[in-house]
Image 1 (cartoon, rainbow, N blue to C red):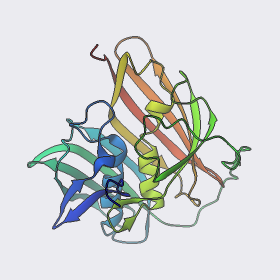
Image 2: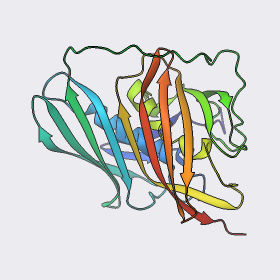
Image 3: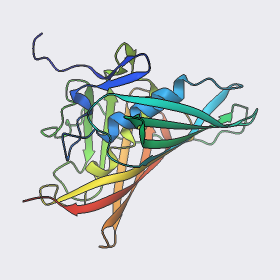
Length: 258
């Protein structure tokens, strides 16, 4: 259909990733957004081979500079390869210059005592849709608002699941979903009016106790700030079976242009 929005964030050709309109940034259309970039990094991590059976444990992204809305390349470098741990560096590059540098940790898989997981009483069914007036993801993401909202200052809780593809022809996996929703917290728990302030994040970190077992992921976020120009977002992540991990973001507050 002419004019229809794509269902993928990137197209890949010979190791080069070309963003679709879904990767446009919320503050400046010249740059790509954190949801897309975090998803691409997780996709590259997932595709990298592991020396033994391992589980994803931690992903940390440092946003070195804005990533232009244009083709980018990637570089995946092993920093440590062992039977117990694997540490990878994943870089995204624009015109050969790194814009994102991430470290991705895997841990060997083994039997250990399991703790009982608390089931969250409110499931997504029956909850209202998150206000998505400013979102271009509406056709590839479903949301259910538990509390707060994009127009409500303070903590917020939303359930989300992705229906599209991170790279054309490749569905968004549970790991990629977790990485993408790790970037939701800043908008969901904003403590400032987005019409007066921008609050771009300069990093994203994700710690997983286990992989999601359902398409739906619960994102519960809270932002802290001491009035010194920065903020910290703490996000708890869960699925329909219970808690799965945590995410954090460091925010850079700035007044928007009038």
